[in-house]
Each structure stands twice: as C-alpha cells, then as structure tokens.
Amino acid sequence: MIDPQNVRPEIYQFRLGNFKITNILDGYFHREDMHPFTATNASASEIEAVANKHFLPYPKLEHNFVPTLIETPDALIAFDPGFGKRAPGPTAGFFNQLLKKTGYSPDEVTHVIISHGHPDHIANLTTDGELTFKHAEIIISRAEYEFWSGNSAIPDFRGPTRQMFQEIVVPLAERCRFVEPDAPIVEGLTALNAFGHSAGHMAFHVESEGKELMILSDTIAHYAISLANLEWKFSMDDDPEMAVKTRKRLVDQAASLKAPIIAFHMPFPSVGYIEKTNADFKWVPSSYQMNI
Image (cartoon, rainbow, N blue to C red; front, side):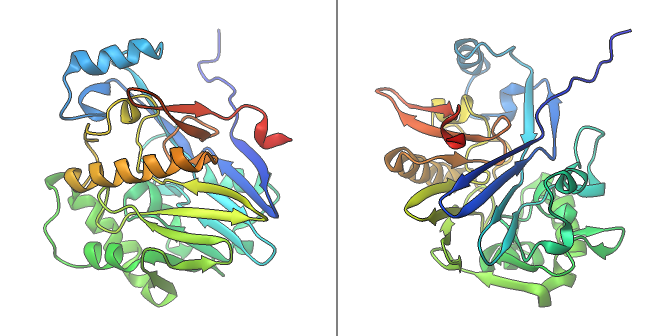
C-alpha cells in the first residue's frame, strides 16, 4: 500500500549578509474553501479564475505555517514559533522537533518575536505549562498586547484567540518587551506597522552588510489570491479595512525594495519576491539566488 504521507522539505537556511536565516515548516492545513477563506468580498468565480491562472485545484488549498529564525552575531531570534503541542491537527506543531535538526535548541533562543497574538503564532510560547524558550525575551507590539489582554470588541470568531492569549501571554508580561512601529529590536532588525490583520500586527525589515529582507508576517495570506487584488479581504483579518490599507502599503514597499520577502503563510520555503506588473502584483518564489 502506498504511504499517504509524502516527504517534503521542512527546513530551509540561507545567509543574508552576516545573518543566518532559517525557515521551518511548523505544518500545514488542507482546506476546501479557497472561497471565501482567501477573499470574503470577491465572488467564487473570481477566485476560481485566479486559481486556474496559477494551476491550482479550486476550491482546495494548502495553508502553510512557517516560523523564521534569525541568527545574528549576538542573538538567536525566533519569529512566531508556531503551534507547538497545541496544534489543532496532526499536520502542524513540528517547530520544536525540527528546531533540533537545525543544530539549535530552544534554550539558545535569546528573543521570541510575536508578530501578533493569533494561535498559530503564540501557542508554542509554553509547553506543558513551562516556557518553551526559557532564556528568551518576548517581543510584541504594545498595541497588540493591550488589545488582546483587554476587553476591546473583537470579531465573533476570535473569542478562543483572546482566551488563549490571556492564558499564555498575559502571565508572561514581565518577560515581554513592548515595542512601537519603527522601533529597533536588535541591530539590523526594525519593527514595521502592519496593523489590520490584528490590532497591533507587525512586519519587519532586516538588514545586514547592505543586504535587505522583509518579513511580512500575515500581511499576505495566499501567494496567488492575496496579490491578485489588494482590495480583497482575507477572512482571518480582524480589521479588514485597515488590513487592506496595510497590504497596499507594504506590498508596494516590498515590490519597490526588490529584496527577498518572507511571509508566514507562503508556500514553503516561504521566500520570494513581490513583482509589480501592469495589472497587479505577483509572488515570485526564490530559486537558487539565496544559495550563492
């Protein structure tokens, strides 16, 4: 009998100047609701047309979860380290075991950066009630922490998100550094305002020895649909109107920069470029340019 599980790449590493970047496939979900999941204000036929253009099997999709590690001369930084043992299904939650294959250990992580407080980004902060990254400072935007730790109105489907945040992140407040957009985090790493997907959602600009990279976090949710029409609203955006404005700004910035992009939900290894075309924008996956 043919094994239903396929072997696939799970770790990808490359150099950016004096930094070492590692992307890890925490996992994936297979879904059958490309519409309306990827765009609530588009028609099913519009989404199907984009899928067909990209040779994708509408309405099926694969939604990847890809945390990033950056090793600098002075730090080891984990961005959004996935679900951990709280993964809601058997195809996700592999960050910790794959981390060992990279040669790093959780105890070596000096900083954990939380781009925003959704479950696939915060759930692995603790494991069985203990800190997963025992020596790490936790960095999160002040706006994001205040939003989820407080009582502000939230979308109807986000009740479990607030509960998880208050159970996991709030007790760790003393370990947190709360930052504002444009704040330097460590040398070569700057927070960017990406508000909309969540109240204090952050993206990041990375630079080492003149080489640049942007980490867009959840600014784009699907490599084909999200860039086909920047007005389309992702179903998981907490403030869809603000998310559209942010997406336009950051996608245009990324295209103008012509530097590599990492985004949490892009197909693994989740490294590519954003190209501006006559009609829209296009995701261009990296090939071998990061290896030479």
